[in-house]
Image (cartoon, rainbow, N blue to C red; front, side):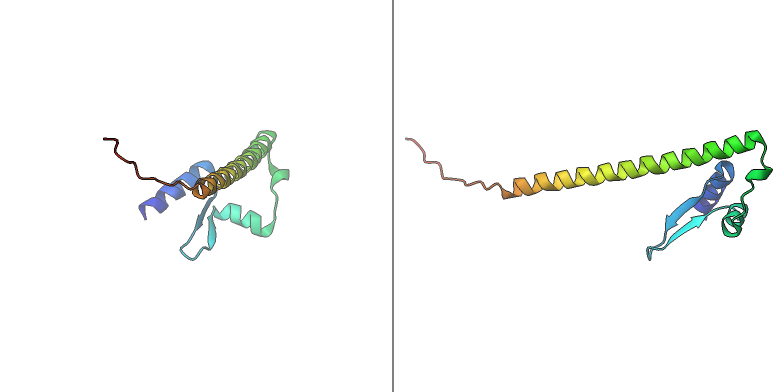
Length: 106
């Protein structure tokens, strides 16, 4: 419960959403009721925003988009690294070494 309170406080401060996956693999999003109502009712309050509020909204949307792009790029990079590592591991596994007994020279 302590972690939920920390997450909710962070959501309140940043206005972001929190995404998590439960034990069964279902994905859930925690967001404010106002944001949820806007999503469900598909109301855009852009026309009621001042110029500064509109710019803040645009900047936030751009930041969210950019973060998503960077996360996707990082995910792809890690997948490529994993694939390269697997290929190298496969190559090493294919190498065979033979040991021969050493005779003492006396």
